Image (cartoon, rainbow, N blue to C red; front, side, top):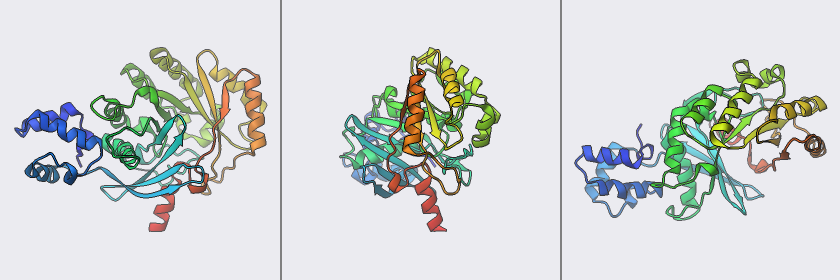
Length: 345
């Protein structure tokens, strides 16, 4: 399935050239698709062109199927894809701007032990246009689609972004293009469980998004029990890769660390986190665990989290506790989709 949203403006111009259509029509269409308008709303286009587009390209790549609003203002979205699959995302509204969390795959094949996204495995990758569609659909819901209401993007929804490298990097080009919604890579964060070869490739190809590493353990032995990818890439491999990424981009590295009660929060873990994060700009984002019943892993109390964070800070490790949002509406990755699939069955 091909969407207009998968195309850059130059690619769309080339498509139109092949159809003997003028370049200015491509520019008009690109402005409409960036505002996430339907073909029927493209009122400055000839009807015959609109009908031609309808016949050759699918309309908008995703549609908002359901929206939940948390007591803290967080919005959780369930999106329907053209093939009937569903994905999810979230919008965090802060005083500094609106941050959207997008999915990059239907499901996930990484199999991390604390995440609902991978239950059932990977169904398929999303196209660049399907990833972009999440941003544009919510941006339109927040206004008329022509004004940029989304200020920040995090690729932290369902799926491993670097496992869908080609489509994700094309999405980065699309979403940061001055021809489109033009969100700077400085305002985009990509979360990965540590596909080191792709981290090197991301740096070498000139991308400069903020990189977040899902670490969640301080030893390879324990990390292998909750993150299968650790059987391929060690923590040492990850540290080498992120140091390379920092040298190429100048971006501080973020380590995501889910706190698991009586498992990865002792004094030894504090010492290891200091070793892992030393020698380059880095920060540890401590995450209170959203309980996933299918996984059976429990989090810690607020007091335990505070003590762990304070100990890290006292040892010179930059660390903060991420404020949990949307827990009353299934805020963790994959929870809303799992609920929907369960009800559908």
